[in-house]
Length: 158
Image (tube, rainbow, N blue to C red; front, side, top):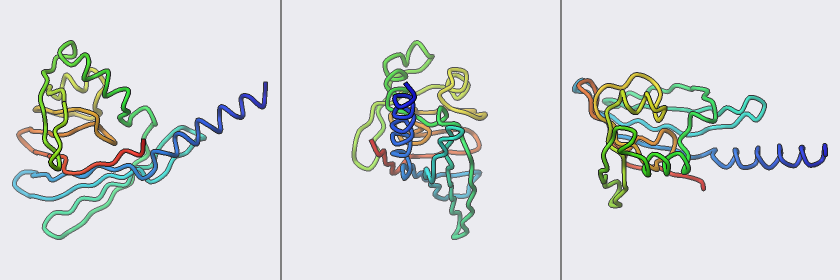
C-alpha cells in the first residue's frame, strides 16, 4: 500500500514538472505605453503543489521582472479550457475566433466580471476577455479602458 502511494505521488510530481518551461507572451498597451510581457513557469514545488512564475515586461526599452508563487489549480489546463469552450454561453460568454501567430483558435469572449465569477481568471478585470486553450492563464486577448493585451506566442509542454 505504501509503495502504491509513493508511486502515485512520484508520478503526480513528474506530471506537474512537465509544466516547467510553459510560457505566454503578450503585446500590450497600458494607458498609451506599449510593450511586451512574458510569463514563464520556472519551477514546481511538490510539497505545497505550487508553481513559481517569472514575468518580465518591457516598455520603452526598460524591463521589469517579478516572481509570483501560484497554486497549481490557478494555471489554465487543457481540461479547464475544454469545459469553458463547451459551456461558454452558459458562463455568460459568446464564441469568437482569435488568430495568433497565423493560427485560428476558438475562444470564449466574456466580460471580465463573468470570467472572474466563474473562476477562469484571477484578479480584478474590467472590460472584455477572450479565454481559450492557452498556456499559463488562458487569456488570448483583453480589452479594457486601461489596458489592451494580445497573446502573440505561447507554449504548452503537453
